[in-house]
Image (cartoon, rainbow, N blue to C red; front, top):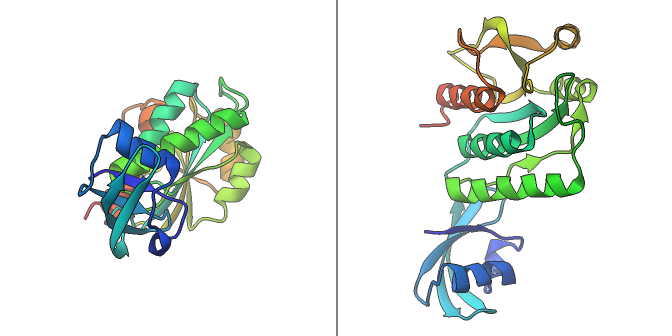
Length: 235
């Protein structure tokens, strides 16, 4: 079944928003009697039967409202050192599919991209929304405004655990994880020596993702996958 996030409360939904109605009627060519899943973005979902279908108007009959099953218990915020645009889009998509709660772009010393405009942030949020719909999430992870490393460290200090993936760090724990984790991944070229010192001074623990050097677009999804597996997010 196709899945769609809507802005209105589920219990008040009798008609699909115009953009979703267009997709249902014109793109997917669904007819009366077909079913879709509607999500409120707050962890709830309901199966909706299409009653009347036209290009501009799709009415539905809603089934029971239930918790969406795709949300993990562990909340992981990915602090991603800014890579090239295409790599960031891939990281976003995979991180959302794997269960990340939020993504914070971080300008770091070795970042090739140094700033992110509103248009780019809007595109990244749309990618996160599409990935959440496709993967069965009950919420749309937030793509936050771009921050400096100093601000990222201050934000990470508020998490239950704050880790920075860096080759040569301590092994990633594989027994138990806290339920709120801030995870920093460097850009192409990794974390610079001066940044390592700043992270350590800020109380951010350096962790290793194994004996192999991972590309920046691999490291984040790999770490999130391990966290989800150990914390029960794949059960």
